[in-house]
Length: 252
Ligand code: SF4
Image (cartoon, rainbow, N blue to C red; front, side, top):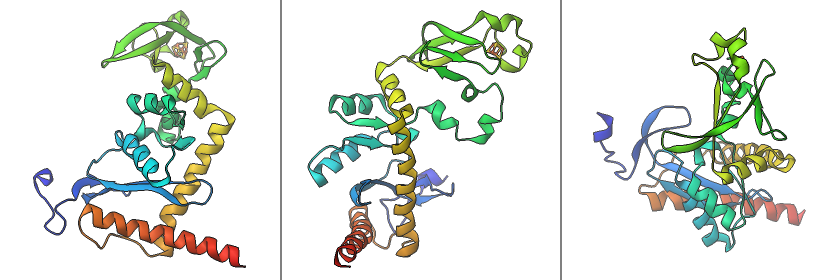
């Protein structure tokens, strides 16, 4: 029923889930913050409820605002999109984005299931997965899964495994990974020592940005209607505070 209703206060808003997992009439707020000064280098509101197609728009926005592409772009798994991955690497932008499996590792309900994929460790040296019983699942072949070409890993050791019934209902366990080479490049970038540092920094920047908006400036909701007006409100709310901080730091 909700899908067919609009807000009379702001007809441009759309039904979507907010951070507290409540579904209400909202905009989806997209923001990029630079890691050195915490300044907003790109932001906009969108009516799209999901983030999967937003990195293109954000890269475009950053280029308009600062005139160059970022050297490194860090985002969460919700932004993963093969077209944008290609665009980024073609333009020398290093992407630090966890794949779905890495992202799932953060959810304790997955880690608690002993034979969930998150508990299989990828071994870069042998291009294989090591299962919770210490067996190597080697690359077998490529196969299409839901229209996407995947690399398939397996082992015939499953046939005699004492925990097979808990691990798989099939003859042997199979692990699927996207075959796209750029996904593997991104996986390696994310797992690299610098990748880990960048990704950790992202959480702090995010927290600082939203903390500043919500708490320091008591910015709980938008007061202006319409996406363009609301965007202006957001820009003023953040960067003026940051510039003020920088000026004070210089003056002391
Ligand atoms: S069934 Fe296969 S993959 Fe699963 S734990 Fe046993 S040996 Fe490992």
